[in-house]
Image (cartoon, rainbow, N blue to C red):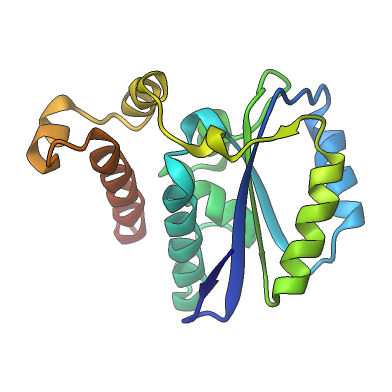
Length: 186
């Protein structure tokens, strides 16, 4: 769990594999009905998440957007999804990084004002997700890097320009950069 001092929020991330959610809308409604309304949560297709840092910076950018009044969405959870996808349109964001019935590896983000809120929400969500907890789905693999480069339109030239022989760090850096660019494109 991470504490975002500037905003007084706690945020935690987790991964799940072998997930089977046949009705995503029903699943989201079920989660919403059981969670404290002060808790912010979001689900992502883990195949397009470049480590927990990717999600952490999406949260940070979304919180800053709300603080400055430059948010795109009225919902902080949707704003986080927009930043995580580096998209300005909700449907494009959902198509890129949202979950569908075909999604088998998901990343979960939970944010609250206390550690107790976040831990309680994570416990509830973990019990509702039909899959196995495995934070390794947040890690980068060769296949995932290829998918991320395609999804976020990252070129080999960009990677070469910033890579210190660490491809994973370069990919994470470039995706965080894409999210930061979204913030200034208003």
